[in-house]
Amino acid sequence: MEQLLIRNLPDGTKARLHLRATSQRRTVEAEARAILADALASRPASLVDLLSDDASADIDFVPVRMRLSPREADL
Image (cartoon, rainbow, N blue to C red; front, side):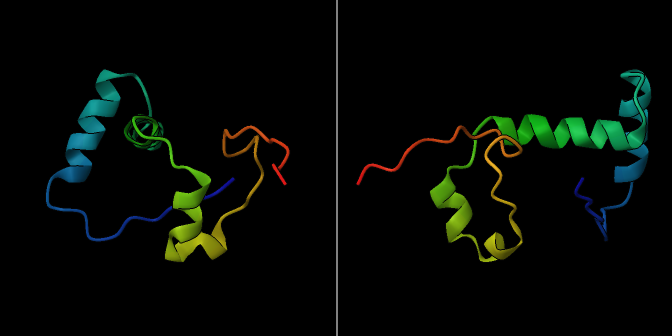
């Protein structure tokens, strides 16, 4: 399981996130995960996108975990 620490949030962000989490009957952490998942689901990253990113060295390329489907290479 991966973790993410977010520093330097704008003033009031944590309080607004807490209010939103409470209204959804979730923890702040669960609400933050849901917001990130919804935002990223609108445009799934392709393998090319992931490889072209400078942070690609930290990516675990397990197809199922990344919600990608494996396929045979066309040679």
